[in-house]
Image (tube, rainbow, N blue to C red):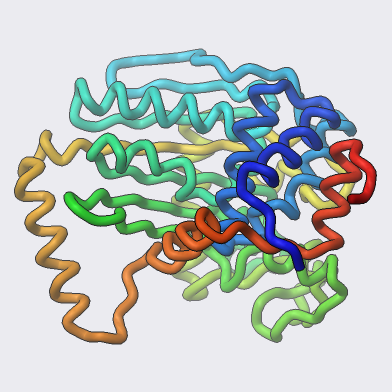
Length: 336
């Protein structure tokens, strides 16, 4: 497979999204996020999503002309309406507002309502670490996890992400969905006609399945059983009860014809200077990390994706020829 520069792939993805109805600004910021996810090895949240987003734009499940706006604000908090657009412009505004408010108050909480698929959650947090602050992100998503004791999907995969800046090194990044595997990974396996391991999901009748397509219309297995479903409930409350967004079970699957998503996100930013102080924060973080790395087998969260990005920036990125041709077709370009 030939290698492509990140700039080439970003331009191709942006053209595809714009051709499907996204504004130039929405197409650009979305393409940038998808290419970063691809470069970091998170293909389930990468360029495979371009076709899905384009489909949603054309079908009216996402408004390509939407502009996110602040609809309520109070002190260290505000609420942003994504206007049913793709999530990335609204997420960028939420992060900018959270940073600004945390600088003033020491902490900030920004909610987003009426949004769409959030992508790789930790991606949105990079500007927070660059500002020297700690960031957390949460999002709900269409129903994927059954409530404990139930058979039907009720909660979304409801990812949780956090970023912790370091003084002279790359930040520590934590990014996980609350299922044994991401829905995006199952989506890719369904597209390729591959079976999934037993234990990842159940079908719509609650039976364990190895059929990836059946898993997408069924329920995914929560991490840690009852503990995972409790965390999913927590994220649902943060992203829906506080923002007025749609509950996960009110949002129909991204992968079948359905309603316009009204997903909710939440961004929390904490300024270390407002607590024990920036110097103490960095000292304690480095003490913790040094203690972890005494064991040579330990790998810091986020290290693998950071290494993959560095390699992609210098060497370019390989993607499957079928995906490349799909992007070219969506962008209105003939085969090379």
